[in-house]
Length: 168
Image (cartoon, rainbow, N blue to C red; front, side):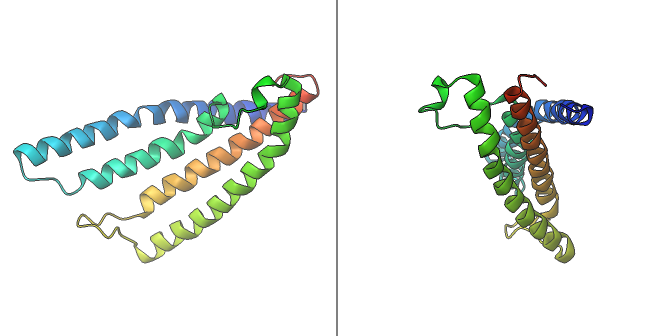
């Protein structure tokens, strides 16, 4: 494989590994927010921001962890036949089906970009009592989709290398 592809795969894998490891800990932030929600409802005046903040943390948790999940191969697969296949056959199948993932992520990113542009341009807010701006969580979603797209391309290059008898 050419050097620029090797550098691309290394850079994307390294960056997504770090983002994924960071995103892992967002679950604790979400649990802390929900714990505070329970405490404040029991002993103080209920906080209006807790449920929606926890939802935003959950979005960041799974969307930023998506590329890391693809990198680790822990994404969901229909393993009826796949588990019994040779590594070469798996690489061939993955190299073909990754285009469906790239198409899906591209459509999602297009919609996310349109929605984020709208949220920024018109100052979109949530319809809840707290009424936070929506653009921060939409930017995080677009960033996560870009990372998943980059990781999908990286996985494609790894599959092509495997088919050629190399490892990246």
